[in-house]
Image (cartoon, rainbow, N blue to C red):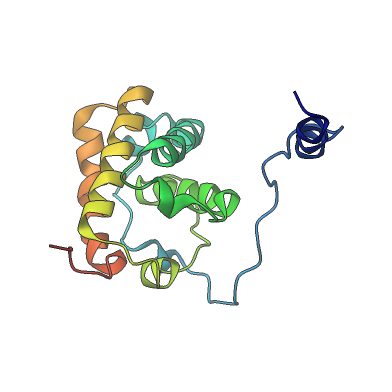
Length: 166
């Protein structure tokens, strides 16, 4: 092993170990906060919210879904360089709000949040598959998953910007 290799390895590793993930959100341009930005009205009542195991269950689902998306070769590149702290917070708020929970949505509207990402229908579909797997992992009943997905499905036209490549 060469000394140059050892010096290079030491500079990469450093004495403090690997860099931890960010814990603070990155700033965004000002916008008007509104529950209307969530993309749809909430499901009436709190039965779906309870089926999702309330806010703690929704948090677990979002953590699992983001991890799946980051590992999913179909869409992993989309998540590189994104503010995952903000994404986690706003997804929890959005799903909690739409599921009929006591949450407010403070994120941007769907078109603005996804602008210039170049998303295609296949990207949206892959994310939904990862969300379904996370809901299955949490033990959310199929009928309640479908009620939430029915609310999310129309957002496809707000988030997809590019026609499919042939």
